[in-house]
Every structure is written in structure tokens, then in C-alpha cells.
Length: 179
Length: 127
Image 1 (cartoon, rainbow over the protein chains, first blue to last red):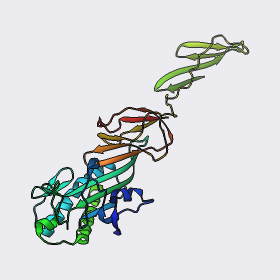
Image 2 (image 1 turned 135 degrees about the horizontal axis):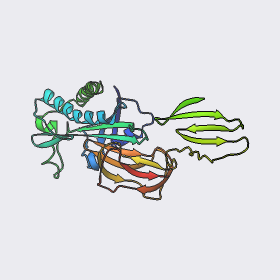
Image 3 (image 1 turned 180 degrees about the vertical axis):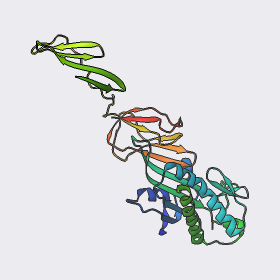
Image 4 (image 1 turned 45 degrees about the vertical axis):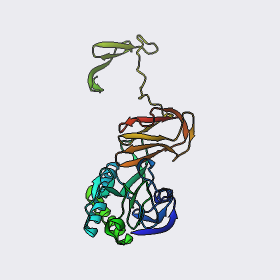
């Protein structure tokens, strides 16, 4: 896994989409996002402490990418459950809740070039994952709807260890889908 | 000389013969065409080869999958470059930026924001 670490960025998704000749499974990790976003442009609160990253996915059929995106939610939930003994709930398509509050979100963005043929050409696929790990506190408007691992567990977690487990899970799942 | 020709699955019996006067007779399925040396007895209409009508100057941008148009970045009359973002199509699990594969003018936008579209449906026509 090739990992590029950033400090404060607008959004890892935006960065990933701007990379020229992006390498498959390249991971862009940020400490903080000032314009993190989810589906339909919804703001993703991304202060320091959280885990925010985007992955360049291998070129795949659009249907496989769709399946992988759903599976990504299961992978993140599994990592949370197995490492921290919490009971995450998946709200399809791509949100993960713990104790009724959102803890993670997943967004896959594809750049698609329509072709005259039967299959569209997926030029680039970027999966962004935001997991509230070491966030101490949420602003008033979010405190009733969002939570973090630190709030739930009362202790700090290892962001990079979690990141590696998620990537490993995604690679395994993609292999299963495309076989 | 007798021969059989198969055209588009239909078989034609053709008989070609020559008269004493030097005329060439061609009988196709019972109908006789006679050709003199320097004259023609009956004009034979030969069908023009037909090609499927396709306007190659028009380029249709189609939905890669079923979803909802969440954003339209261009307007009719706009000139677009290759790889320029045209639309954003949200499928349940993904956001898909539809980019143009060629340069051209947006002739027609066939969809509206928040409209549901099916995979393969034409969204924009470029020329």
C-alpha cells in the first residue's frame, strides 16, 4: 500500500481526483479536512484526530464498484466491531452508526467517460472514508447525531492500524467480487 | 448457363443465354431481360447501396448506470472540451462524474436536475 500523508487539506477526495496518472491502491491520508464532503455534497466534519482517507480503486466494472462500495461499509463496521467490541449498525448505503449516532461515512466517486459501446469507461474511481476516531467533541449541531471511537471508548485509538485493516479488507473483497 | 444466386436469404434462379442475333438474355426468376449489343431493351433499376443512417457528427452522452441526475454543469450552446465534467449522476452508492470524451457544442440537454434516468438513456447530445 502506497500512502501519502497530508496535514490540512480541502478534501482527500478532491486531491485524489486531481492526481495525474493515479496509481491503484494509492491512499491519501489527511490529518484534517476543511471541506470534507459526503454524498450529495453533504459536509463531513473533519477536525484533527479523525481518520480521513481516499483510495484510488483499481479500474473495475461499474457494477463491481457499486458492490465494493456497499461492502466497504461492512468492512469498516467489522473493523470497529472486532477491534473495539462495539456494536456498529450499517445504514445503507454507506453510513455506520454506533449507539444511534453516526461514526463513519463512505463515498465512492467515479469519473466516467461514456462510450458508444456497451460498457462505459470508468476513468477513475476514488473511495473516500471518514471515520470519527479520536475526535473529543462535536459542535452543538452535531453532538446528538455524531459520535467517535474516543467518545464511545473513552480512549485514543491507532488511526494507521485501523486504516491498514480497512485497506486489507477492501483488497480481499474486490478480489472476491471480480473473480 | 444456369446459376443460382442467394441475396439476403432469398434464392434467385438465373439463366443467361445468347440469341443468334447476338442478344444476351438474362432470365431472373421468370422475368426476362434482353440486352442488345448497343442497346438496352429494358431499363433495370439497380438499388442504391444503403447504409444505416447515422449522423456521425452527433455524439450522445448516455447514462452509464441507473441513477438520479444530481448536477448539470453545462447548458445548451456551451462548448465543452475533452474530459470536461458534464453531469453528476448519483446512483445509490456512488457519485458519478460524467465527462465528455470529445470537444463539441452542447446541442441538447435531455434531462433535468433530480431526474431519474435509466442506464443507457441519452442525457446530452453534443455536436
